[in-house]
Amino acid sequence: MTKFSCADGIRQAIDEEMERDPDVFLIGEDIGESGGVFGVTKGLYEKYGPTRLWDTPISEEAMIGAAVGAALVGARPIAEIMFGDFVVLAMDMLVNQAAKTHYMTGGRLSVPLVVRMVTGTAGSTAAQHSQSLESWFVHVPGMKVVAPSSPEDAKGLLKTAIRDPDPVMFFEHKQLYGGRGGQVGDVVAVEPIPLGVGRVRREGSDVTIVSYLKTLEHVLDAAATLEGEGISCEVWDPRTLVPLDREGLRRSVAKTGRVVIAHEAPVRGGAGAEIAAVVAGEFFEHLKAPIVRVGGHNTPMPYAPELEGYVVPGPERIAEAVRRCLGRA
Image (cartoon, rainbow, N blue to C red; front, side, top):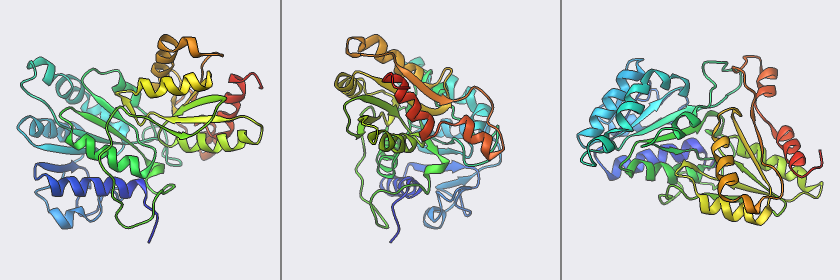
């Protein structure tokens, strides 16, 4: 048996929810017989057929428009944006329609839609296939934003997202699909995980590092290095950016008194800015030092792997940010 990966967790969540609820269906580009460009939906077409897995033309606007319409009449679509960069083609359907319908109809209609956003770098996928756009949707009222960092979280959170009555943007980092597995087994039982509940991935006492998606793995590596320098890092994973677990974050900040926020998206306007604002505005009395943010540099993603590695924060840059926060740089 192989390790349970994020791709396994996502596939199993879709399978189990499609089996549980006949209104759940999958829509996207190349998700059917080919199993998706990253192989995440492999095997589902053979089980459920073309009426439950809809292969679409290369038109994100048409795909999301169809999914929103289906959700409005009682279905529960899961739409896959093959590369999250191309969600820009469907922003009107998402931001002006899906996110607003419940409010504009006085609660009479809802849009139970999950949009699976394949996000982040994958090694030389360049400027138009490597972006991390989660902060765009954090900014939109009416949407929930999920960013899992482990196979178990990917499965449990996706099951909850599919059952949610509101549109959920579900971010899946390419490099986590076959990344570090947790449990071992062909099928791992995971119950739905509530949205808005973060978790401590590593206990510590000197500084809280907040991170999610692939960058959280770099944070854990940095924390292991810093432990050898006598620095105890608590790693806190929000799991969902909207809703944000403010109470869980407060407990960690109260414990350590210092905060570093790390993500792959550019620092400017990133989700880390909102998290920093929450900490500074609501938990200021716990802070012993200024908040430090570390993230992607403000540049389009280069193609060359050496330059990509420079733009995206790795364990070394995260460790340096922690040292700055503690005044040891």
